[in-house]
Image (spheres, rainbow, N blue to C red):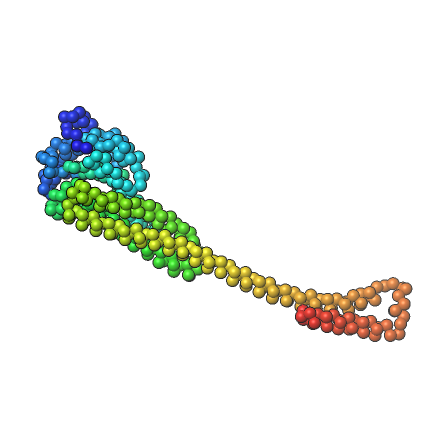
Length: 356
């Protein structure tokens, strides 16, 4: 779709988008020839079809985005996606305009979280319109890099698209390294018996899954771009550029897939170690209970042995007059003998049962 030039009724809307423009430039043969303030001015400064406008918007509202869309004659479905944000990474073609959604990532070591940004790119024959809904990715470094390489920038909007892809993918590397470091720490904590490690594994697994959702669709997008090399006569240098980006993205995705499997294994190992620890505690409690029972048996046995003579002595200590045994000459000796015999019998019984 061809950009709409001023004079086609879009000029009154141009001022609405001006406040969201963070950078705007017109290039010819890889060199900046103008720095317009609005998309309308950028289109007006395009000298011919070999030149290119690159406009960057930051957090535009719906009206501002519609104003920019009217200037570049963008498809309404792509504009709707850019307005509603929170899109999955994807690549769609509307006529001669590519619509690309990318998810950038930044790692915060203190909180062990990954902050995701969102970038929408409209890439036409003579323009690139970038719409950022978050601070990352920061595209000024990409623009500076391309402006320092005019031979690359002169290849047109596709060169800008591939450079942005490269910057986003390169931004994944510190995130992968940060997650790898966290996983190494978790492995140490798991085998060190840290009681809080299960929660850390769960939270890191969520970050990895979200990161996987942001990166995995990239492979399909890059394959789709590669499939169009011949049809759209993509420059050989850009083809090499994209293959390099694809290699880096594949490496990132493979490492993230490995992280997810590794965390699942670590969680299983941690559960096993916790189970073993619990079993060991139960074993110790069982041994303690057995030892306590043995002591209780001994105490009970001696209590029973001592209870027998106490019972006999208590019976004959009652103050009843009609107790014939009290008149026996050998009653005292008989009582002592009964006490001793009872104690001996009980001791023998308990000893045979292993209680003493």
